[in-house]
Image (cartoon, rainbow, N blue to C red; front, side, top):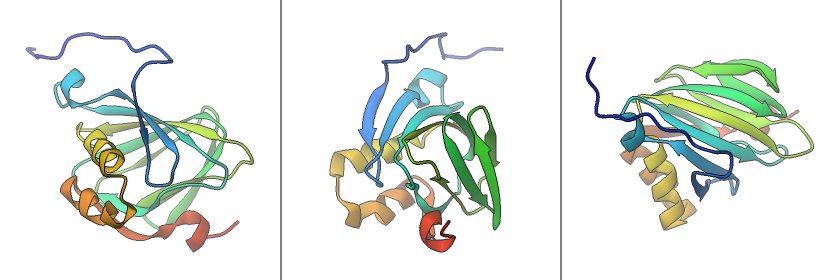
Length: 155
């Protein structure tokens, strides 16, 4: 099997640090260039009760691994709890969102396949304009279709 991707490692303090649309932090650990387009790996630090609006990806499947904290995930209309060491999966084309339900910041490792979603975070952070969120999302195949989980299904 031939590939132009090269083996690499990334340490805990490494990666491109970006602000998310919710004001949280995304650390791009691996992206399109490092993986030859195979996958993106992003660590999210999500504040208490925070999470993104309901959205769907037309290009990527998305896996969420809980590194630290208590989260709930909504995908395809179902709610799934997951805590440290747990995970959830959202296939492309299925509306999904998540929420940190804890009282402290939580951490998620997000793996998307194929790669490319890191561009959404890079462009949003560069423009830092919440009014452009939908437009930036659509450029990356991300369509915002509803409110955050804390609004649609308060705890």
